[in-house]
Image (tube, rainbow, N blue to C red):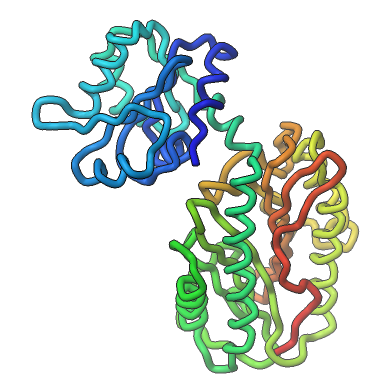
Length: 354
């Protein structure tokens, strides 16, 4: 799987002769290969440069590009320069969202062409997932859903957050994941008010919530989900907060479809939480795009006015966090369609009491 043709087709819109791709996610999107290299895409041809660690695998996996290996006399930058000269490139786009200042200075000082910021060329393409990308995300989510169904049978009072996080990772790998999308978040009791809390030695106690935010990668694409479950009977206030978050998520999903800006989706969910009196305790955005990376764009937050494209995969994750007491977050990933969205996450969302 690669997207070289799509990148080449976008060059004219940005007034470019070629696009230089050097980031790891950009490289994977362009040539469908996890290595360490650089891609030069023109309207007529594509070139991929890598080193001896990856050349054998690249020659087997990369299609549609001329592949060249570095050697002691020519590093990747020298090969890029040679391609620019040979192909007559005058205006070369680069991923300004990823390239460091040091990298830019090296290329700018060496290349006989103008370097033009063009991160949006690829980020805009990546925002709208195609059918093959969505199928990989569905597989990643299927693995994640299975891990959830197993972890709720595993959890017992007295276990630590760290134990539960370790088991989640083991189960996802055992079920076919390539790796984790991110380090799992597992928090219980008062730690639940930390949206990005780090699993530690706090033990699960009866009458407490456990919030688990986790996901895996399959075929290079991420899953992401959060579920909050109760261990023993929750209080009425805990039930009220949980119900509020669930209603907020459903309101956000009901407002989700292609063409709607993320700001509007966020507002639909945020209104429910604010009307319930918990507005100050929902501090983060409603959702973010997911794909090759766990955080992509566009986003569903209070500021993003970008209309969602068909095929955008976005998290739906409102939360309420009461400092020092407990928190609740519920998260699915949805894919935008013309008239709504498809929910990839299949795990139940009604409150589970273990």
